[in-house]
Image 1 (cartoon, rainbow, N blue to C red):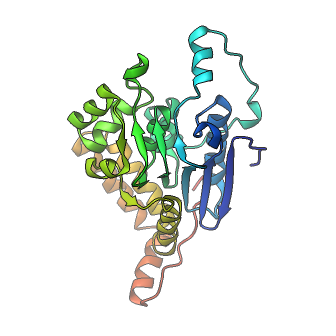
Image 2: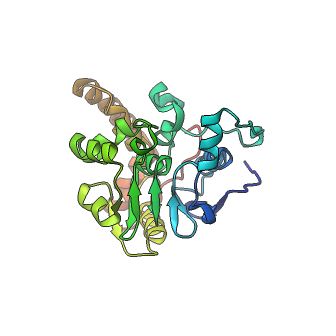
Image 3: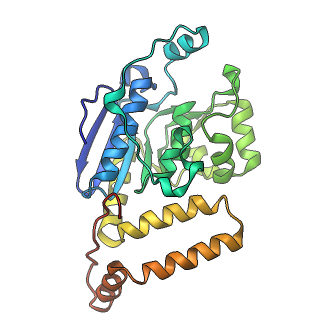
Length: 280
């Protein structure tokens, strides 16, 4: 899969794909093109068996400041002109996870590989939603967050009303959504929004190092199944999730990865797990 990206950078260095939003002069604010390019790049990373995990980050001083205000102004006035982005058409994510994960940006939760948001600066609006929909957030201390929706006359958009309370609790989520106040990476860590708090300039490399460590020690297939379990089971009753887990466990016991995991433990050596490819 290939495309001429204009607003992102895409680089694969086995075992990690890095997607960098690249409109630094606009704090990497989204355009329709950038959103299409990110979706396309996620599909490319998912299909590449060199890639165990994916890092999403921003160029310059920002992660992503949300939707570009010029684009929002065009939408509000009804004067927006559609671009032909058909060359970027792509469908990342596991359709077997169900329709809940095929609505707007929820497809990120169904991408078959870990997605880490390396948050290096301003993170607002739709950029905040993307950060929440990533599997993990590695956050620099000086990063600045805001939901911003209420201050634009909007509501909790893009899945934030579902994912944010699950990450930090309903009261803390409502505070951030109602007030639209700004908060730092350090507060994101205290709230439980950040899985790692790092120093300025370190988020991307910390995420790459984490995924590299996973690739050296963990079954990529296990990563895929566990990710699917966690998000699907948020929508299930306990008994239903247990029955599905029992079935998935029985399937995992038959795979070569289980044999390799036991053998490597017994032989006191690093495991050599097969990489994940689409369709497996």
